[in-house]
Image 1 (spheres, rainbow, N blue to C red):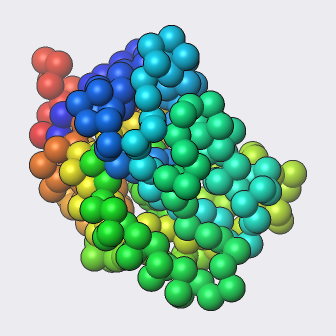
Image 2 (image 1 turned 120 degrees about the vertical axis):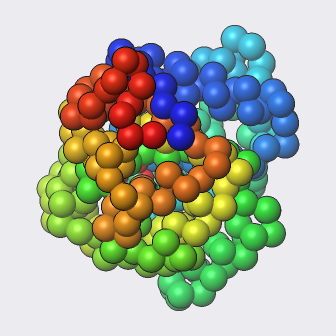
Length: 251
Ligand code: GLP
């Protein structure tokens, strides 16, 4: 795992944006695996700025998002589709039909999971998968205990995850109880992984990732076995991890 320590959220966002832009420049038909949440907001802002300043084109890009809440319509202000449209898709030259998220309003959720897996398979998986990390070490909405072999599935969100995400809703009761998430196997199959972490709230999960074993109790830990993973983390997120002469002790 390559680890890039940065000073701030701002620096993390700049470095992550450069990483994605480099991917697009190398292969303008890349498949980008995208994530939502507070962690990626700054990065999307920088991608939009870069699109205006440098004309980086998304014409041939296809995107696969990690997850979506069950029961929120596409145009619900809190849906991940709305987040993606507002933060990125509406501001770059990416044809909307080339963007994909699971459909949290599908009548048959089991069929929807199969459809999403087929789509991932037909597209050939992500060339680069962007990831945030939950405070409990989840990736996408793969909560602790999820099989590393999992495909797209419906999850019941843990109370701690609903609480962590309640800040976007008027009350915790409005936070959906379920979500559809890409499985850990599909995430792992991405050619490259870019994992981002910022702030004290993520320090415990990052410490467990870097110092602990690969274990289904910590979904993100499987990424230690990935051959092309970069973690960009700020000092706060790395604050519980011991460092030796600039090299983290455990990798
Ligand atoms: C959420 C999302 C994840 C996200 C993570 C961290 O629940 N499902 O995709 O990476 O938790 O969120 P945030 O960036 O807001 O801390």
